[in-house]
Length: 200
Image 1 (cartoon, rainbow, N blue to C red):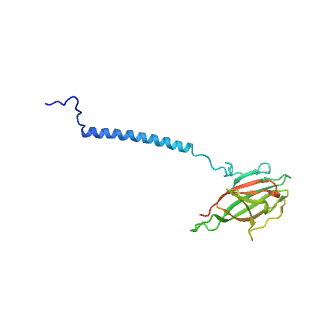
Image 2 (tube, rainbow, N blue to C red):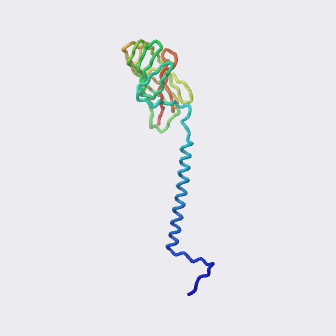
Image 3 (tube, one colour):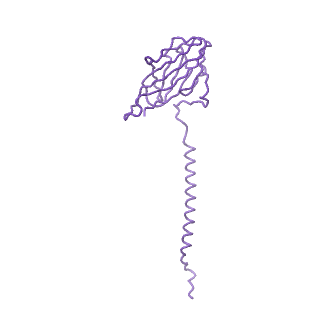
């Protein structure tokens, strides 16, 4: 019987070869998984916050917020704000929209016609209502004046105790994020409603 030379390696059997390959695959998989997990955690940790120009909506938007010149309320479209005026008058305002035409059309422009519905109720005292006191602003800071929609209600110049009013406002504005503001009597803003203009 011939013995192999001490410096000569004995060839691996088929079983040993498969075993070595399997160990290599397991080690490589573990290393790759560790790298992927570290990379993913780094991406999540460094993603950053929302752009500074976007409004920050409070977490309690399902509740009726209180708004005044000293502490304007900021909420989402469709939510109600109880507005307090300096003379003690009060009204609950809700803004829904915008509704836009042309959704699903093959060509979508950078601007579109937007329509909001404003509802005022629960009036106490005398509340001045002027369409010029309501404006919208887009994410670039552009201010848009709103016009009444014919046949969709016209608010009185002053809303008396117990009265309510519902009307629609319209403008053409840029697609993207926006805010509708109300400053009764041309004073300071008392309520803001965040919305998004989409036409796709």
